[in-house]
Image 1 (cartoon, rainbow, N blue to C red):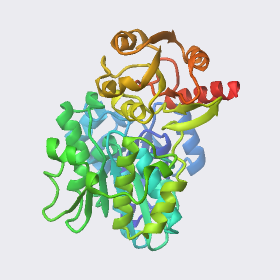
Image 2: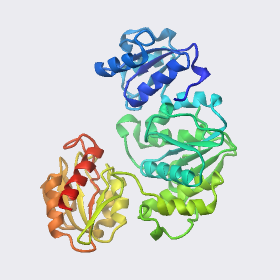
Image 3: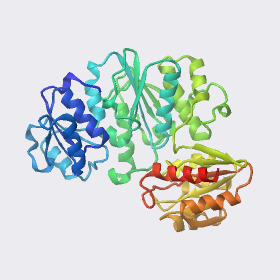
Image 4: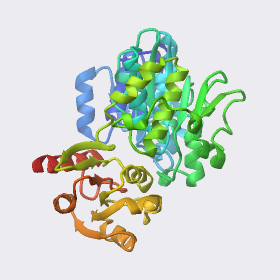
Amino acid sequence: MIVARAFAGKHYAVLGLARSGAAAVRALLAGGARVTAWDNDVVKCEVLLDEVGREALAITDLEVIDLGDVDALVVSPGVPLNRHPLAAKARAAGVPIIGDIELFAEGRADLPAHKVVGITGTNGKSTTTALVHHILDTAGIPARMGGNIGLPILAQEPLPEGGVYVLELSSYQIDLTQTLDCDVAVLLNVTPDHLDRYDGFEGYAASKARLFAMQSPAHLAVVDYEAEAELGVLDGAPAGLNVRFIDGVPLPGEQARWPSLQGPHNEQNAKAAVAVAEALNVPADAIERALESFTGLPHRMERIATLNGVAWINDSKATNPESAAPALAAFPRIHWIVGGKAKGADLDACAPYFDHVVRAYTIGDSGARFAAVLRGHMPVAEVETLDRAVKLAAQEAERGDVVLLSPAAASFDQFTDFEHRGQVFRALVEQMA
């Protein structure tokens, strides 16, 4: 794990003992800190106590203790800072509210010389983070991938000198971070999302933009031009910060040669990753080889199978219309499985690509609503469930067509999460195979 002398002798309160919270507790204790922790799931508390030793960790409901002697409150990104009573209590006591990424930032001084790449954006950040990591791995540069993807960064082994930490950062994680000076910071795009946590769209965009505000002037910001032009995401950045706009990055070779990077959205992701790689002095031939060999991420434009000439694509991670739109743009003839727990009533972001859809199959809580929106633009079948959608699409799709699960909605009406939804889709397709 990553341990820092900066933790020694301090008292931290940790709220939430899922993966990042438990990793923070372990790292803080190993660094010589005193820790008081709490999770409403008693099982998580007991498991961690058994692991670290009951004499080493205090388990106490943080809402009933005096925060006066606490140096910082460490919370998981899922804690809503705008309405959680403990967040208000910490602010009233003047206690900093941070997350595991800030602990990593505070511990960087004790790590061998390294660089940090931070990647945020409403859509595409997981793919871009994984692609940057793959490019570095292909080039033989030691790298770790963490943050909002993979293992918590504090739970990973420190890199040797010259290594690169590649962090996917949600707005929630950036909200809990104060001192992360990224050598390269990337903002892919900003579209409305998570507005229940922010004071409107501008507040959400400002949260993303803080990634640049934390940088030193000598470092590099890789920025979506539209986000800067419309939202001024560089307004709070230090004077003299190096800036490169994603749209102006030339790609090495033809996108058609990169099987897992199809569609206009992946062109943008690839341009951002290339800009990062070039800033880190990765050789051009290694970048080209990595683009060709990248296999993509599960549940994000993932090709499950090709059956009788029909491609089956799992894009379950598309939980809003903005993230489903690029998948629709990527293929000319689509049987579109869409619906779930909608984040809004419209599919406006997808509308430019309605002519790519041969037929839509609506499922879940939003099925009827989405069907009403789509009728008049394409044939629609209200099938309610994923298994019915798969069966009907299998009957109707012709050679050369694509069956695309890109729901444009969350999964919680019928599934545990988007991963569960994608796994069910894969199982249904594999049964047919």
